[in-house]
Length: 503
Image 1 (cartoon, rainbow, N blue to C red):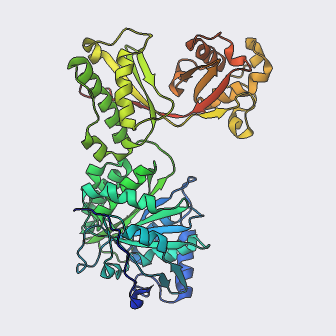
Image 2: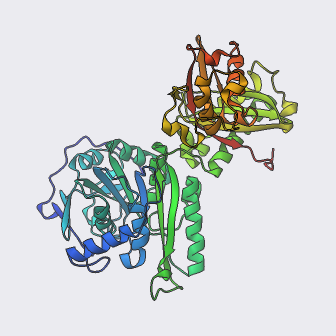
Image 3: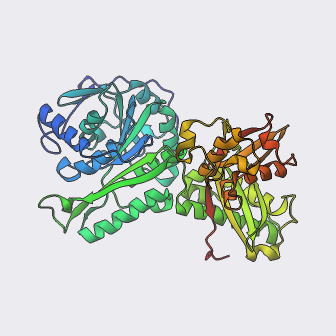
């Protein structure tokens, strides 16, 4: 598909299409406004919130509520409470509307029994001027968006607008571009609802197998696997995956069912329904982590054995788009349980994948504490990657009650700070450190040193932890007690290369 910008003015909306009316009331959901509101409320209230994090992207099924209402409610229940613009995307269900890209609903109002929602004209006009977005009115005649709206209304009582979108033929090469356009069209308080049913008309056992594969692919954020999902909108899933990667979100599967579970359901020909949300946190999946450690291993082999210039394969980024996120990372090398090199950055300056490539080479060749690693050592080298959150400045000696949590006012081992000859004013901060075990950066007289969270395994005593942090930068061992010392803390996801990995 060739994508081109449109700078032309948009034609006026046909008067007959200024209002998009409901098509499926009485069939996919109740008929009367009162019944719709009551059943939507009942479905939402029966779906307890499962996440404490913000989830600006959710995936919900769009079958009749009789079949999939509970699964849809599980996702929609997790939408942010304060969104003001909801992008609703569903795959094209009209065979007469054959098109590439994403069709944008140009109606001004989406009218449902008992309520109406304005269509956000700013987003509509912006998208229709961007490559890959088209105006195909007949694509919007199906029920696949409207069936979600009463459930959304039961969650979000305040004012909000919608951006209804129907996804046509969409290939792997288009998904990233379309996701970027959607992301740029979204405001700060926007949310995304992707509407999709999973496998169609297989026997129950086969349907569950296909659907489990797809849910696992979504959980892994593995685009190669997602492309093999059997659904009514797999191209749309690729766009969703890219959008979640752009926003550094992490997927979580909440629920699954299929039509055989409904009363009098047919087990020989079923449709699958999945509930997935994307939470506001960045935690790599096991396949993504394995890809990073494999990249670090390949980098070392390329540089040390072949003398080549390591690079990040484009196919790797296409498969795992979150590896393009700007994140800081450390690469740690050990040999026979002893540190052999560790280099990283605290502030991101490039993609996570590029960070791992550069820091793998630096850990092997440029850690001044060690002789360079040789090619002959590679079989005995074990490696790990630590992906860091951004460090946050911390007033370590005046921790908040939230920071203290279960730590109380004493160090985790039960000893008082005074017993080690340390001023008691530091005891609460030391207790927090011992309890939380974060990564710590220490800045003193223009020099900065850091220990990753994993270092707590070797230095569990907080006083010794900070003493060694001072010595690491060549400062006096008690520099951490000085008014000139400042601290920042961070968390890190540690990813260890699998021991049975072929090298």
